[in-house]
Image (tube, rainbow, N blue to C red; front, side, top):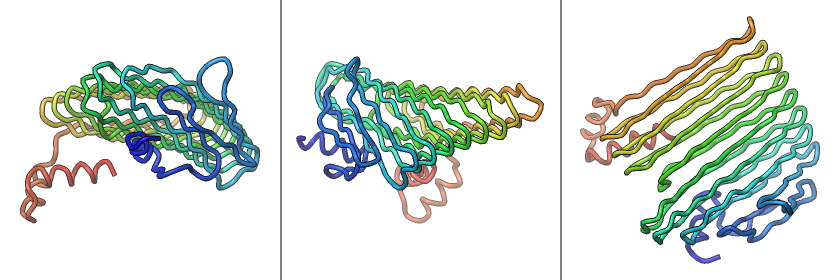
Length: 305
């Protein structure tokens, strides 16, 4: 890898070299390197771009890294990654995509990640998106995540897009069985003329399952954001959707939370709040010696932490 690719890898996966354990690193539209571990097997697909990840039942305290980096302008790819997670696992999966575009052609990475969690499996999934480069070509990322949580399964998703992505459309769909739990935390910041769309759809089909979706975002300059969530309570369950956004400059933010109770014992809640930076917070920080810009950055960093 060259210096740009290593820097992208550090931004999206906190990696400074080859990770320990199982991993698959994709660079400029091709598989760069991969390795399996005793309990985690990674197999490259033969019919289309992507990999299959098989995690043996009972695997504990192991991680999988599957980052993607693009450093050449004009690359457009669609990658399929399927995760087969055995019963009683407890693992961490780190994904993410970094794009450096120094040319005039658009760079576009789209990924479809499918998760199947067996009974009582636990997964923490971390996905970061990052873009840089001074070219005129756009940095485009369109991730899709599809999840099937078996009985008693638990999945925690942390997604972050903080800098440099010109256009993104993120889709997350999930189906929950009896006693399953899904927690999603999204952090998003847009600036310039960037556009970001988020769409969540969760079917709570099993008795006593639960889902909690949280989106925190900041929109600057002339950027545009739209957050849509659809939660279907089809059994005795608990569902909660939250969207909290800060709007600045000439930006626009839309929130469309929808909850449907299709069972008498389905408990469904949604919250949406969009507003500007609080003036009293700015004044308080500026009295401590910060400039207005520094005060804004402090508030935003705390909000997205």
